Length: 454
Image (cartoon, rainbow, N blue to C red; front, side):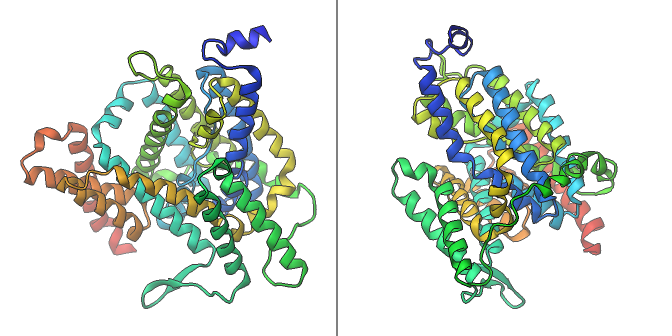
């Protein structure tokens, strides 16, 4: 016990082994929904669901343990919500990558993130983008994944005349999805300790109600299949996906854009989460600087690379870690606990499989996470005209193009253009000028090479 206390610096951070164990359990319960939701989302892009479940639990377990041991942070990692939707729907459907190629893109972005984490480039990129524009990108992703959640549940459907409209509310599965969304809204609105577990509780309640309705003869309801592990036969295929995709991704003209999109999201997701939990976790030093930040970023980069190798989308730090921190977690010991619990979920695959097969049981997760990401919009400086214009363009173009990367690109170009018009070019970093120039070139090439063939 003394070795554990010394290794994790428990006394220095004013915590105990018991507190860390409880904090780890709380964090795990707050984010365990991902082992069901992530395979559900990625399977929509053609990924093998059984293999993705195994990869999700394995990647979350290994990288969270590594975060605890290397950085001594009470922060857990798992495949990120939002970026998994980008991989499943933007990379595959919009950009034309196969699921194996999408994994290869994640892998390449992870390698680049790993390199960037060892250099000052990471800081340059983070500092180059105005704070308000960062918030706008987060809000845009929130809108994007909430829309996907509503679409997958059948609440919003396509229409040849108006593009989208309300779905068929006489469909029992759509009504079940609506029920789940109502439950998560109610639980989250309580704004107490139970709100931190709104997602997992609403998923379980919706599943129980759906199964019960199915037993009474209602069609389209979820049901437990045979209690087996047959879908684990997909694991070798999923784990080999990167090596299949890496051979052919170079022929896709949108490769650079896809890599940049994932890299950008990963960098800012990680930085945002670390900043959000640093103060309550006591991770700031006397100068207000984040201790061991480089190690934490390095673990995050390793997580993305490792996750792609085993068969899942970008792994990132989870804001749900704040749930355990509020219960007293202050060290990496709590992360080790979370990681071990994620590894245990591999044995529980037949139970979680029900969430993988039914969008009605997971759509509320995308909607709530979308709401939480949308909340960043309050921090945007709406009085600054270039920010107002670029934030609006980023959000609306993300929705209308169905691509996060193109939304970011349009937003960056509008921001730089507006600043130039106002003769405020000295306030724009060279990195923003460079990125905007690259994006303009991309759209020129898009118009010449890609658009005529779409």
